[in-house]
Image 1 (cartoon, rainbow, N blue to C red):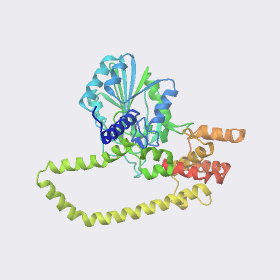
Image 2: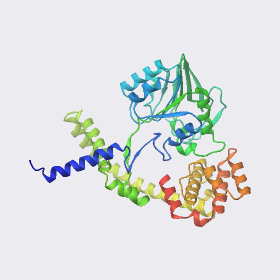
Image 3: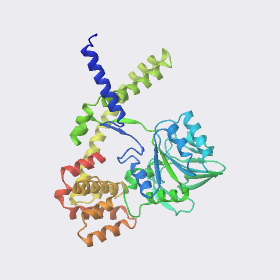
Image 4: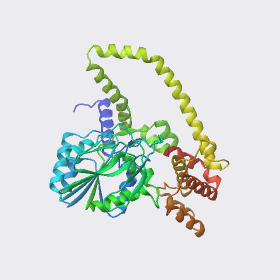
Length: 435
């Protein structure tokens, strides 16, 4: 019997481990990025999917359209949710979407996107609406968070603040149901067996906006959509998002056990190496497409751009240092209450209030020893033995507030929790990770 070389046995063992890790799905040190329903961080939609399930609806995360869509044909009313996709739709995706429309009695589609990839969904369904990706809506005062009013059929007027929102081109056959200033930001298209709601901002359904309980207009908009669609099942696109590696040193600092698991995982290193390789490959393809002129043009542009890049990097470093300094001062202000945010920056804005709420959630998570998603529930649990404070918390979350009122509430809660816990290392780590 021939003797098997040790090197071959070692290679087979490594290959088996690699296949085993790959079969487990998302490996340690990796995460879905963007508005994926599998992303539980602030910029994902995991909480939105959870809220839909908590409301009593069947939820399906569609990682493979070809596998899932045929099974959806067994339902009468289907709601398909597509939020800020980061990967283009293929021709087969569009064909599967057309088949889904023909096999269910009522298909309702929510398209919420500011980048433009979701236009392929609208075109496949014949919706006379286009998302102007790359063009962003701003307020008359130049604020990056313009105010919008959106009203779905059967729902109330919802006043929301947008993030990176793209205006819509709404043609004959579709109806504008939401505006920000003079820009159409929401539209509705209805025909036999098909209803499509188009929003020019996918951030309306991100975790950090729907996380706050009480009178939350973003949760209310989601509830309006569910009442309008009345679906038997809600299918949320989970396919058109990228998988990225986490920074290894940050992993080791935040969670040593996960960091070590990533270090010994061959899949982590494979995917981590593919990310820069993919970017280099795309760049080389662009250069090669121009023949010999490509390298010449790149070399000439690099020579001319070098001084400007150097100055830009210097300004960027100064900006980052100023930003870090401002963050530290803002954190100190929120935690100690020795001065108002007006000392840090003129006027209290909603982003200041959101910053304070994020920090309060980190403090509550550290105090309870678990990750708190719903700040209201976390505070009520933390102060469960004090009826007076519990009533104060419930009253706060029952209505909307100005930025200053939110900040004052956060400061009071931090004082009640105690500065020792508010300044704990775990709270600071959770807050830093949430940034």
